[in-house]
Image (cartoon, rainbow, N blue to C red; front, side, top):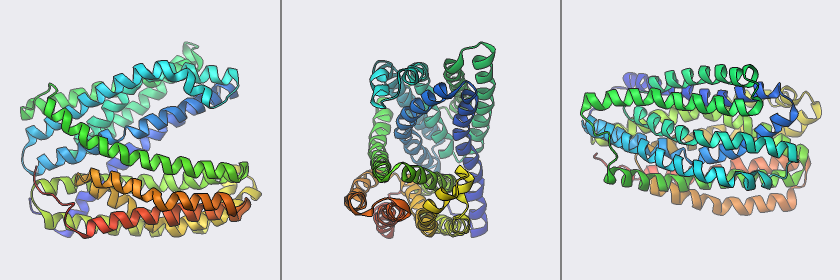
Length: 442
């Protein structure tokens, strides 16, 4: 494989990133539809959905490695010209997802009551959360299979089909929820059931697509021990990487909670802005995963370097643009979210810190995608743990000395964006300066 000229490379990045962005946006739309429909049932069901959603987000967020480990493995074989092997690797990832999902579903049914009790909700809210989770657990295998199948198609340089399936799934979810909640009168249970049916419908669509690919490229559809083992090893390292990220996020929320209720709400607003901007950067990182994996599979190391440079440049410039928008709107964002000028004043300094840090965040997200695409999962996992070493003491200092108010929230933002993100930028940046991450071949 010879990397295309700059204009063509730009088109390849856009071709992969834009549909990926659409599919990423479809995921939170599932949750928005659930919340909007359940909200009409009353405060108690909505609060129960909030607890259940937090539990499900944690589980599903930790399992996202199924997509991230499958994409580079498939892309490498595509670059090497082994399309049958590429599809087979993706199918093994789907089998692994089914096994993990089945185990999580069975365990989840039994541990759900205890998990809900940890939140300390009132009995009526806790009952609603248990109901939702008890049904939603049977959708976990479907969610994980969708992750792996999405990773397969991304590795095949196809981000359009996942967009279509995600869009159809979103539409089915909305229609089924309306039918089950209001038509059948199942209330919150109807919301959970509608989402589970929609998720399995997406699995059915992926099975049709993948079966056609398997026939076309003569790929094995049965699970293979070696393939499952390879997916599990790579996924295990990426699971550890994701676990370190979740630990950092949860520790930050814990410190924000200690600063005060208003500060916690302010941090939620700031982090929502940060997460929204991350969608576009994740789409760019997905493009980098697919192109880097394909390039290394084809032994095109120079081309991989060009993909690295181009995606980083795009990401940083996007970060500059987002930072400018957030900075200019920092005085009114709080009013948009809450309608309270006092909250707007409270969070403005933190938003300014966020705005300044956006190019750094973009740099981190893109490099993360590049190294995932290179299959450098072990380094990412170890670096993720290492990044916590300077960040945890910084959080302790904020908790001990920052106090509340806008200054305390600004110091928390400085710790997250200035210490944690900088640590991630250093560990990732140092890695890509060398050659060890670029292991060529299928």
